[in-house]
Length: 237
View 1 (cartoon, rainbow, N blue to C red):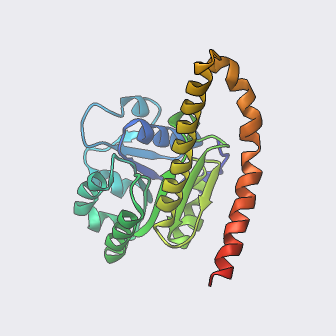
View 2: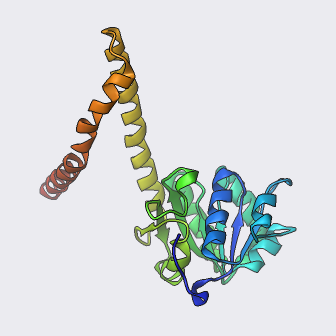
View 3: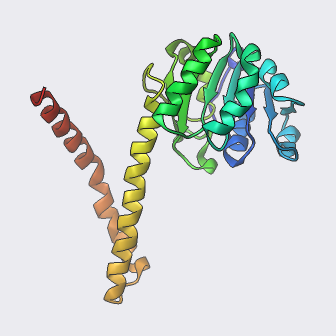
């Protein structure tokens, strides 16, 4: 948990109370932020209310209750369906969209926000729900630098590593997709390795401890390959 003074504890709103949305709201509450929550379908949020959250009666009421609104729903179709009627309520406020989608959709959402005078940050949560709010949690943010800097302390309640990538709103989604591509390819390789071992009657549990040696050398390899790629790119210009 990030320690904050009362001056830092701005009122926040979380829209979307799926597993990740509840984790985000819980992290805000744990840090001491006055937290308002809202979900499209009824029956969610009672556990958060028991911890001190306010359950809004409408999305507009939720947005007007906070300086900072975080939305986290299934996709951008869902987020825009919620946000489209809320342009007036959001004007002059900061909106953080932690819904996963494509870089193109992030730019479209940013344009929508800009037309309505909404300071917009697009983001990607890079950890599972149990890690949200922890010092090792990583959430990527891109978009309005002014908004990020103003609310950085609040956003660090969600992740000790709240990383700002730049003003291009698509950057968080681009990083997210690239990192997930690496992750899922690695999982595919792991499944294949276990299958290969099994052909010679080597149990996955017996092989797994020795894989740590392989995974430990990946960070320096990644850094070296990234450097080489950048060098090749400069040469090709």
